[in-house]
Amino acid sequence: MKILVCISNVPDTTTKITFTDNNTQFNTSGVQFILNPYDEIALARAIELTEPNNGSVTVINVGEVGTEPTIRKALAIGATDAVRVNALPHDAWFVAYQIAQYIKANPFDLILTGRESIDYNGSKVAGMIAELLDIPSVSIIKKLDIDGNSAIVEREIEGGKEVLTIPLPFVAGTAEGVAEVKIPNMRGIMSARTKPLNVIEAITVKTLSDVISYETPAPRGQVKLVPADDVPQLVSLLHEEARVI
Ligand SMILES: Cc1cc2nc3c(=O)[nH]c(=O)nc-3n(C[C@H](O)[C@H](O)[C@H](O)COP(=O)(O)OP(=O)(O)OC[C@H]3O[C@@H](n4cnc5c(N)ncnc54)[C@H](O)[C@@H]3O)c2cc1C
Image 1: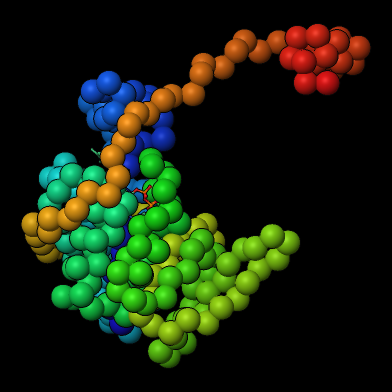
Image 2: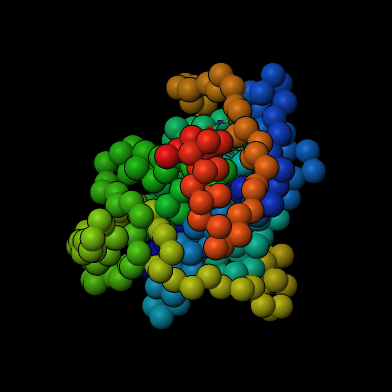
């Protein structure tokens, strides 16, 4: 079984977000980038599914050379090889188009993404890849098992769960529960240095979206602490100051 895992290089969650160029560009200066946490889950499940049958896990990233430490981390965790499409990822359409073109030339049994990237939170790439390849896609999966030429997946829905069977190949966006993330060991870290990382050039794509501006949330107001037994004061503050009751 050959699985492709799409990996996104995202700012660490503790990053202080600022913008440049009249609030149209994310300021990457001094930012620590990490492997998108949902993609770590996808990668862990892909490794579990391929280990017993000597399959392979390829990771793909659309990004400039600065994403290579993140790609090497995925190799250290256990991916077989990696591909980097050498380009600044302009938007989800650009990313999905590059990945779909790669898959057309190099078919896989299964394509996994994270449920969303934790930077732009679009949840768009998986569905777009599937549409470009004319194959099924399923979002926010919590469980994934392979059964012959199809897969059984579980999704959480309001008040319960949905169990689906889907023919391979398809694209799935993974969420918590699909697998426990794997911590790279020393052997993995050493072998990651020599595993293949193929760099390919991006295909020119018509730009479909442009950012007008980004805005950070308004700073939080000061917190007022009310003694637990002073309900009248709490009610008064909610009524007079917060004006929510
Ligand atoms: C320097 C820099 C500048 C950027 N500028 C912009 C910008 O101006 N506008 C904008 O919309 N985005 C920008 N991005 C983000 C980048 O284009 C996103 O990867 C893309 O927009 C998809 O985001 P999303 O939230 O829709 O992804 P989602 O659809 O939420 O991602 C779901 C999954 O798709 C996969 N995926 C996402 N991105 C990639 C990737 N690059 N390579 C491989 N797999 C991926 C991952 O598996 C991820 O879990 C920038 C990123 C960087 C590093």
